[in-house]
Image (cartoon, rainbow, N blue to C red; front, side, top):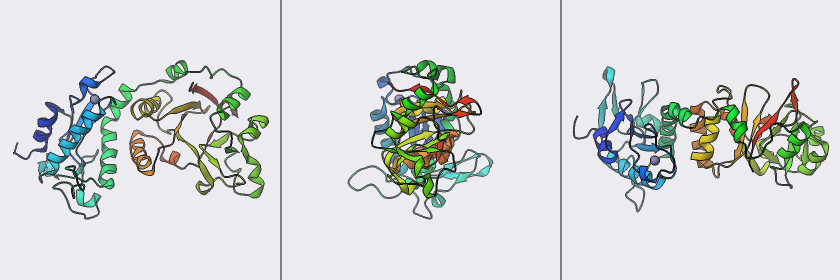
Length: 342
Ligand SMILES: [Zn+2]
């Protein structure tokens, strides 16, 4: 190893690293003493490529991890270094090692912008290296891929356990009750769309856009679908432009089974602190979880990068996307709430 081996520099900060690839390995969390849950051997990872990052599954250690991240990025960003990879490839500071073994060059990520040292200019008035949002997103995406197996293990939440863990008993309620219980998640002033996928776009579809109180009277009879977003009064088209503020982030996956996708829900709730409102069994292969929407566009874009790497459907970030409404029947089977917040 040379003096400039980034892995040596990383080990100087986090201690011994159990390297899993040339650039990423398990380490002891710098804030382990702050953990409020049991610490597993694979809870914390250090990565030296892209935006160098220490990531831990616990959230109570966040201040200590942030301080170590600052140090890691400062030290690794202070010099230009390179790592020889098997097969003769070379990875330089700021490059990212992709899951398939290829190297994404820093210049390609930044569109030709200057490479490190300091991963660009230092942030004004601080000693922290500047990280472009492009580099952060690309790094996030490969990190999510890397810790995916540990995430599914650490946050395992199978379907039967979700039903059992529900703060309110909801799964056995009758269809009308299912529907009205779900309606109560919306503030009363909201105009909500309910219909079939094509009940949108023409003036006669105004009847599918109604205040919550109207739906309370009508019941679950106008279609199998709704949206995670409310609409402007008078809307007849389910478009993002007509969404008006109140919205939920509905997480679903076409590829993860009902016993798998719960890990993503639990990770979002417990680790990222998104408020979970309900989980709906779609009466098909999937579950939908309704969360508070991200607070701003930056958080939303970062979450999207991570969720996509986990196998969730990026179209959930289209807030006018139709999703299953509880209380309606799909081929004779009830779309129903299986988890509901207190
Ligand atoms: Zn930790």
